[in-house]
Image (tube, rainbow, N blue to C red; front, side, top):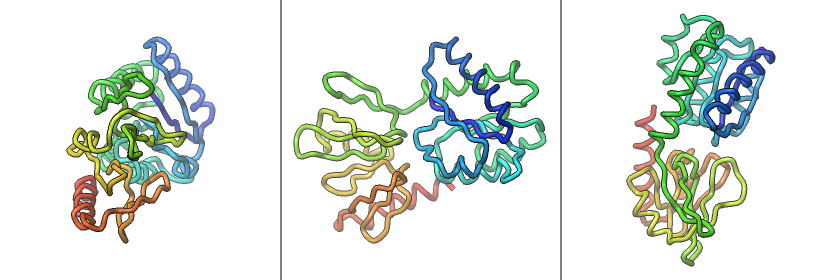
Length: 237
């Protein structure tokens, strides 16, 4: 699990990280953390590979509700857990689809059950696809796939959120298109299958992805592809 913590109280960040790390150890889970003492720095970071954000509500630069609104628009699938001293903030969380609230005064009583629910959400209900890479079968969460590139051979390159070298996988792009066409992926052109979750916009026959990549969109199906993207985007607002 990849977790981000944002709180202007650095001592509390350390406490929460330790408590979550202890849970990971007891549950035999691997965990990675990204720590932020400023919501501005949080919003400047690339969080495309982050599963859950623990976000303080009451911060001086920008309150957590406002920061969460920016996060929800950019990362519609990320889980948001508001961390606060005041349960009165809870109604505002409905606007940004907050997953849970964690009272700072009740971490020892509430954190484990919240993390249990997060694990269930991420690892039981998570949508995945099985691919073969270097002879091994691998389960990839669909949300982590930015786009898939055909190579002209029986091999595709899977570009993942967070950067790094693409994953070489056996198979043809047309085969993956059949498996993913009803699961939020668009065949932009002959060589590229893109995850609609990672497309920022489609204009001028180009798809602009959230990792900075720009992919050419086929002239033939441009209007249909753009319409599909706009319909999906509208359903998330």
